[in-house]
Length: 303
Ligand code: G3I
Image (cartoon, rainbow, N blue to C red; front, side):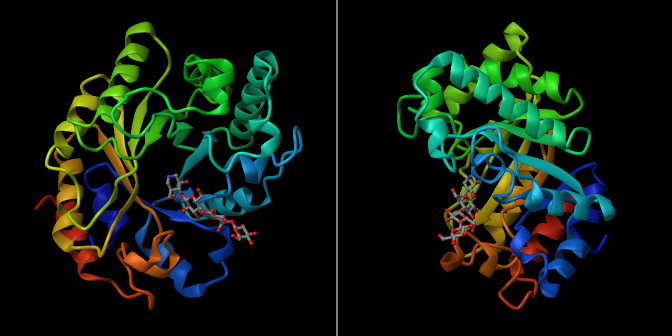
């Protein structure tokens, strides 16, 4: 097949991109989007500061635009994200009462998931909850500090009730290296959830890489998570300077793990990227395919 989405589909996987509502009027952008990708992730439009800026006042205009556009074209949608310490309105981060915060969190999850019920293949229920560095513990956040470590379990249980058909993912960065303490912390949490029957279906590995690409242990990490009984997904892939080999190594690791069900790159053209100065994506500023594009397409073909 001649496109990323069609080639990935031959092995039962999806190939997606982050999409920004503000770029949907750009014809170069949308023509690449519709030609190459069969899954989309709203880059910012489903985050808490976009969907519930004031308590109980939900706004879905930009997210609706992305979801409706994707549905009309047969593209699948990843939901990103329900519970995250960042892009969180001040009215949430200043709550100090546990019952209040629990109610607010559950209401947010339920309301946003209900809006898109049946139309999201996978939800990042909790994003980036683990600390960087060597602790392997949760990072400080209003959720952890007020609700305790149990906020993750609470969030996943609420999410399962809200949309039982969606795959529920834990999503994070710097969990690609099997030897990293952060990876081990997430692994212990997923193992514990599976052992106790807390609903979790997938782990999203963001894969924001430097020019060297994935760590040598990346495929091991994917298969070790998968062995716990969850899918794994590469959810926000971009690589500094986009070396073709670095992209190929990333895609190959996914292809080699049966439960690696899809790959999402975090933007279309270099100019669309949150790290634009590093030119980390598959298309240049003019919308032309870069060498990394060909490396990805070839590797999706299993070579
Ligand atoms: O929409 C406002 C606009 O009204 C305002 O004028 C402008 C001024 O700065 O800001 C605009 O919001 C920006 C938003 O992107 C939309 O462009 C925010 O400042 C900016 O912080 C925000 O950045 C996003 C970032 O998450 C925020 O943490 C990036 O686009 C987005 O790519 C990035 O994505 C994250 C994932 O969600 C989670 N994993 C890491 C990844 C990269 O940071």
